[in-house]
Picture 1 (cartoon, rainbow, N blue to C red):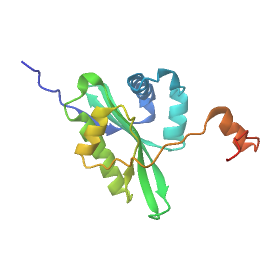
Picture 2: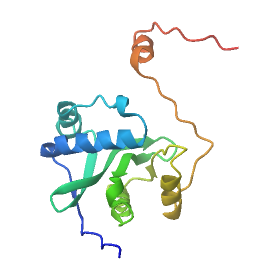
Picture 3: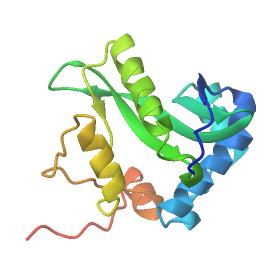
Picture 4: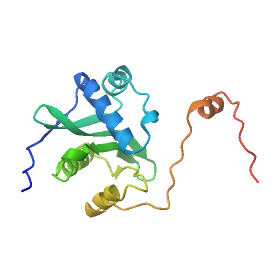
Length: 171
């Protein structure tokens, strides 16, 4: 006989949650098949999220144990002329999926967007993550397939910032 899901709570994270948040971020990186990408530390999270207030984090807890999180921050749409909320990460531990925790976290982020006057909520999803794509679609999201994500980091970012980019000439 299946067990009933344990009740969960959602709350905004505080600076004291950085150790827990880092553990969840590492679990997300494992799930996304890129554990080596995590270079964040408790200190860098504490400074960026709570010191400089660059993001908002919501934690999902079952009892005293954190089982998921959502991290979002403000962006801006020049076309709309208003702020948007960008969902960087939404993660629920596999052992706690299917009990409404992900949906509750997502709804909390949507409420944050509406309550702060944002015009929309944006995020990206890995193309192989079919369960997440289906989840977002069921909630009414539109897949903007025409848009491609680009990234500039590490040495190429540093070089471009210094004006020493080794860019490839356009054909």
